[in-house]
Length: 251
Ligand SMILES: NC(=O)c1ccc[n+]([C@@H]2O[C@H](COP(=O)([O-])OP(=O)(O)OC[C@H]3O[C@@H](n4cnc5c(N)ncnc54)[C@H](OP(=O)(O)O)[C@@H]3O)[C@@H](O)[C@H]2O)c1
Image 1 (spheres, rainbow, N blue to C red):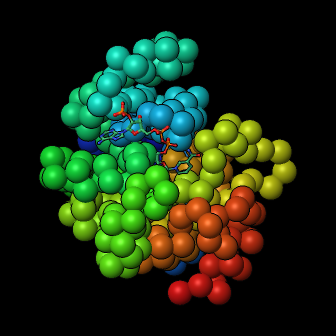
Image 2 (image 1 turned 45 degrees about the vertical axis):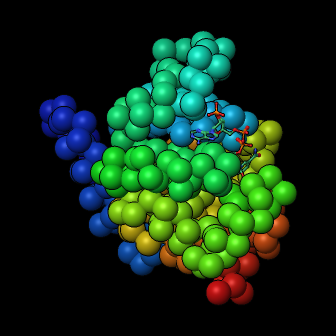
């Protein structure tokens, strides 16, 4: 774990340092889950602040990070942010992307390629985009689910929609209503299976997931994102060890 910096660095320099040092400490890949919190607050943006985006952003505020919640209707997020204190604010999607060092993408899946068309290059400049979005046929339609399948599943499809983004899939099957109760639960932490191809992004995601009270478990690259959706063996809440055992049976 990196030691405290001798003098306050710029936020960008601090982020590079955190990511770099955490990455050094995280080989082999499975060891990522051991990456500990570093403590430097990071500006976090949520694209989508409904049930899941609202609940996840709330956990990050409670962990001490400034969070900008966003949607196409930021005026509807006033009550959410008012209840969370000075670390929380609401904005447009563009404002949130400009604000965040880390972005949580928590939207119905058809919005992912839409967002990519407008914001892919801005998102590619972020150290980490956590993709929580799932393609669900009954909600999103068969066409998008077919397109996602053709790309090799949700992880690779999001990578296609957001070229260059440092993506990690996470939190895809933990219901919004259970997030607060499972965070920092007594005894063994709840495991969060995560998948990504970028080791620095995985390390940063692991740090943030631990800070909000879960245990990240890297299950593989973005191709494994196809299992990080509701209805797969990894979807129910598991201990970290259970996730490792289940992931070993999947390819
Ligand atoms: N709910 C859960 O328990 C849960 C758990 C795990 C994963 N997920 C996944 O998380 C995603 C969101 O689910 P949810 O239940 O939170 O949905 P939700 O309550 O309906 O919220 C969706 C959010 O996305 C925003 N949004 C929709 N289209 C957008 C666009 N084109 N650009 C920007 N923002 C857009 C909506 O705001 P505006 O309409 O105001 O723009 C809203 O804030 C889904 O993919 C879901 O499968 C949900």
